Structure formats: C-alpha cells, structure tokens
Image 1 (cartoon, rainbow, N blue to C red):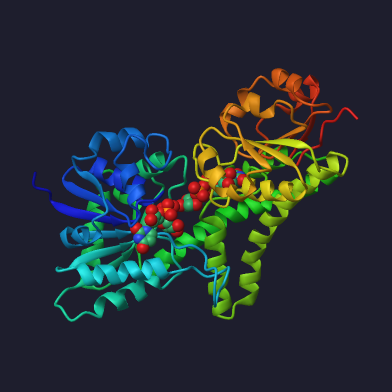
Image 2 (tube, rainbow, N blue to C red):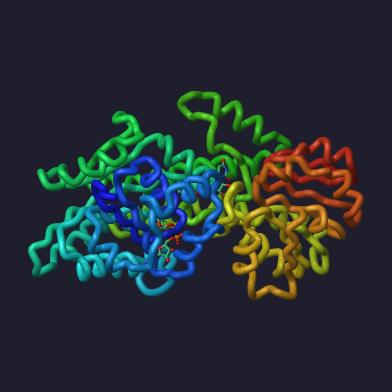
Length: 458
Ligand code: UDX
Ligand code: UDX
C-alpha cells in the first residue's frame, strides 16, 4: 500500500507507544513506525503482551499492528524512510555533575539528535515529544543544522499532556494539542504539516500554536501547576489531622468555586509518576540558572511538601502502632503510582516501602498490575518483602494494611473477611481515602485516613 507519509517515533515508552498507536489508528493514510534501542521492549510491542498496561491500548494496537503501525529496532532505516520524526526518548534527572539531582539528563536526547543527523539522507520535520528544559529544541536545531549535506531539518515542539491510566481517552479527546514552531515561512509550513495530522480527529479550536520556547515551557508549567494543587491540598490535610477537620469536605467546598475547580484536589500519600518531580526540578533549575532564586524556592516547595507528606504518612503509622514497627507484618495495597497503570516510577509506595523496611517491618505487597515492576524496584530486599497477587492472602496474618494506590478493586473488598484473617488490633491506613472508613471501623479496624479524624477503638 502507498502511504501519504512515513512517520517515525524514536522511543517506544509510555508516551511514544500510545501516542503513535492513536495517530496510526486515526490516520490510516500514514505509515507509523516506532523504534527503540531496547530490543526486548520492541519484541513486547510485537507480542500479545504489550510492555505497558493502559486501558484500551491493547485493542487499538492489535487492530492496526502490521497494517500501518510497526514496531522495530531498525532505527537507521526508520530515520531514512521517515518524513516526520517524533522524539520520545526518556530524559531522567541528572545523577552526576553540574545540576546533579535537578537538571535533565540530555545524553539520550542528544545521541538521538546525532543519530538522526548521521542517518538522514533527505529533509525532515523533527518533533520534540519528550518533556525537556526550555530551549532544548534550539540545541537540537544546532546539532541538526551542522551538516555538510543539503538537508534541511525543521524542529517543532509538541508536548504530550496524556496521563497514564487514561492515555487513550486523553489522546482521543485532548483538552488541547500544542505545537511550537519558529514563526518563519519554513517553521509555519512544518507546523501546518503536523496540524494536518492532528486535524484528522481533533477540532481546530483545540489545536493551538506558539513559538517553540513557550511550547516547551507550557509543559513544565502545566505539570508544576497540577503538582502544586496536590501539594497544596496535602498541606491542608496535615492541618485537618491536627484540628479534626475533614479534608474531603474542605476540598469539596473549595473546588466548587469555578475559578478553582474540583479536580486534582484529592489529598493523598503524595504524588508520584515519572513527570511531576522531574519537571518541577527542571523548572527550579532553570529559574536558578537565571538568578530567579525566589521563584525557584517557590516551586521547590511543591516537591518538599510531597516528600514531607510521604514521611508524615510513615510517622503516623509509627505513632498509631505504639511507636514500634519492628517485626510487624504490614501489607501495602497498591504499588503503582496511581490506579490503572502498572507503572511504579517515583511511586510514593516505593518511598514508603523503603522507610518501613528501615523500621524493620516485614512487608507484603499486593497490586493488580504493578507486581512485576515492584519486584524489580525492591530487588535488593528479597528477605524483607514478599509479593502476593491476591489481596486477601496478602493481608492475612498482617498487623496493618496501608492503601497506597487508588485501585477501585480495594473499595469493593470484603473487609470483614480480611479483618478475621489479621492480627489484632488491626489497623488500616488509607493513603488515598478510598474506602468507607466508618464501615471498616465498625468491623473492628482502627482507621487512619489522610486529612480526617482517625477512628479508633482505643
Ligand atoms: C519519556 C520522558 O520520560 C518524558 O519526559 C517525555 O515526555 C516522554 O518520554 P516515557 O515514554 O514514559 O517518557 O519514557 P520511557 O517509558 O522510559 O520510554 C523511553 C524509551 O526511549 C525507552 O523505551 C528507551 O529504551 C527509549 N530510548 C532511550 C531510545 O530508543 N533511544 C535512546 O537513546 C534512549
Ligand atoms: C501527569 C500529568 O497529569 C500529564 O498531563 C502529564 O503529561 C504527565 O504527568 P501522570 O503522572 O500520568 O500525568 O498522572 P496524574 O494523573 O497527573 O497523577 C500524578 C500523581 O498525582 C499520581 O501519583 C496521583 O495518584 C497523584 N494525585 C493526582 C493525587 O495525589 N491527588 C490528586 O488529586 C490527583
């Protein structure tokens, strides 16, 4: 079949995979190829067991794979055939040198730029999909224009706003698609080619454009604002616990003001995921770099509160369980950083597991989708941790349960049965406020929600 254009995506991760699946699904006239340096990942994308769990993704991929969606390790060939290249490689926080622990580690990203330059034999549009510090597109451009052939590259920024667990819904019906380009005739022509792709399913009013730097910055700022809401409500949860107020009631009253809105106001054990912390630290680093120390301190506070919230959760457990956790058996309900994903990157559960192990707890971890990743993350603690798929078996014989991921399945468990199988007094720490606290209290549990009075039998 003759395709209108060839699209390539470098990086078959949580962002690249689902995004390209949606483009291929909505645009049968384009051939979409996703490449990755990791052959295991590519083999998984080509198998019956996709490397990531995302509701609705399996159906789409299985329908169009081999038709206009392809997964491959042949990066060079992919680059040569492509008219349009999305770059969606990971950009972790640096763990060395200048900006250690703060700045983005751009080595993969730069390697990718150089590989495009080395392999390309014709002009192409390069689209930055990874979240990067502002002005990285400029660096990409500088690498790409430094060539002796007569090839022209247009670099665009097109940040991804999908959230894991709802990626397919977010891709199908995004609040907005943002495309940053140079305001030159070439830049605008490249931008319009990308607009044409999205226009296959997204209404024109939802496709917005800007200059490249503003587009890059918008992604960092969106994530910083979202995370800031969670840290804000989490500070209030601490106050509510001291004063016997109820954070859910406060959030409801506050969120009904249309100017504020009711979403992203759930107090929790803390936010996780690959983006929030990394992107805020990038923003902080950027501000420091420009001498804006007050601005940097303001955003650093969002991350600090998140660390405080996770630590507070552990200290609450310790205080409730008679100031000693050593030798106690505690079951973590959920290890994913949020529901409907198997992803555990930056999960608050990882921090809490580590802290509980420090307190000499015997841990049992259960999760419907994230046990494989949990096992990898906690590989060094084989003695201290066991992994049990069935939540009833996991909780049996434990002193306490800590709910760390908001899986719906935990709301519908038979807590009477669980209570009977546990050691007494039995404790539940609900780090997501998802179960019926009064009901489990009446069953016999001592219940500790986030930001609400505890319900105890003592
Ligand atoms: C990544 C970034 O973390 C995020 O900031 C950005 O917005 C999108 O890309 P994600 O897709 O979740 O997010 O990352 P990950 O699942 O780690 O996928 C990146 C993929 O790129 C990996 O499969 C990795 O093997 C691949 N990769 C990395 C390459 O193909 N080439 C490289 O040089 C480096
Ligand atoms: C986020 C952004 O939402 C998305 O737009 C961006 O592209 C990538 O980063 P993601 O990390 O996948 O997406 O998940 P998100 O739904 O934002 O949740 C992040 C964390 O915040 C999770 O740990 C979640 O449990 C937590 N959270 C969310 C709360 O603790 N309370 C809330 O009210 C909402």
